[in-house]
Length: 569
Image 1: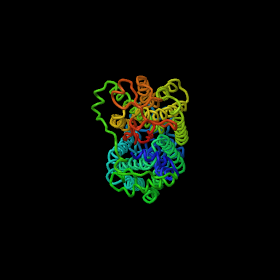
Image 2: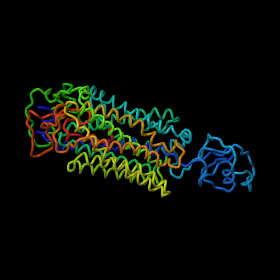
Image 3: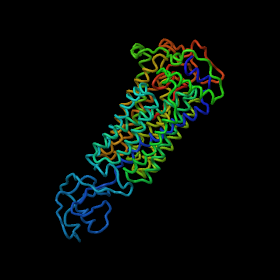
Image 4: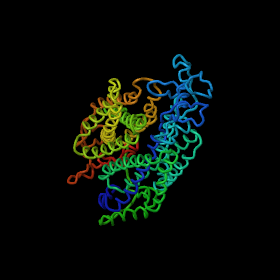
């Protein structure tokens, strides 16, 4: 008997399991708030060059004399002062009354400025205002986001090793402590370099906290409940986004905002006493008595008897896995691997790229964020409903294609001179569709591979998708790096085009809903579908054909057990 078989017998989602699951899922909201705080703390407000001889120069003009000096010193184009240039031939003038026309406003040489004043009506302080991340230095925002993503990648690689060696609970609690301390510490940095070091550490701790918390909760649930539980985690991620927006609305200083987002993490330290260690890990380390105590609590909570268990090691027996080289020997598997890898890559690219691009859209950043996150929560709910009722393939292709088209069409209102709100609306609707396609592809993609290569194939796809995390910050900030009339739509266009291409390539993939997963490569190539247990209350599979392959994506090999949320990517 395997552990998942035991969970089916003693209860898959009883009161005790529900409590453990909710406790382990709550950190998702805090991780989401920390991960997306960059949208607010790196906000770049309107700015212009500072006038050296104006004492306490400010962005807003408070007197006629100040207005005269600003007009003399700063180029004025397209209804606003230039953000990055100043005139070279301005001299110190003590009395500026009536001199606005002394110097012509054309044919004057300009140079880049090195001091700025900022519009502080939205945020009193951001990383951009404290460290001058503007103009030629605006690329530093994207680079800082890449550093954070590198920390996330490192965390994904290392946290599993640490969890297997020292336990899920210890790794989770220590990661939570680092997440709390790092979030507080980043509020006191004095340089951009130090901030990036802190963001790398936070990226590592964020990923480790999220994954180990999710694993602690998922490993006590029965396999048929994990898909639903994974979608609930998506909703908690959205709740964290709302919490961030709410706090940012009232706290307009980035340092205090980081503290406010990080302080709730101190409560995660109590999980050392509130959560038990994973019974799966305890058995793997020979701590059978502790593991059986947890399983007995589950059985008692569900009012079911604990079946006799001989050797506990049999609970962890796994079916054999075939290495990835077998994928390359199969033309059909290779085709699926390439298409799925590209599609997961594109979903990650657009999902995170559009999220980071919120700060560049016109309109109120708080309203934009709230609407976007509300639509994302709605997308998670829709995905939860339709996945069991409609085929994966049509839902996936339709939503990815719609998301890509919305992004590409953002250039049309700019060309027609329409309101900038149209671009903002298309961006929001595009992300709504991408959120649905992202939720579908992590399930659909896993169902496309045979049991014995699923782990290695999906692991390869996820590793490739990590490159999109490193690329998306640069795409989101294209508008800051390119001087063009279409610059506001450029990031969305660049991200939307590959989404359309990926959707068209997905037409080559088969439908998987209602079809048993292939057990072997031969089954997949010949179209034979072996029996595989699915979430059916009235149907069961023969013991001899049941397959439960644990892999990094699903924690159980059955397609109905997949529970990964988009945030893990």
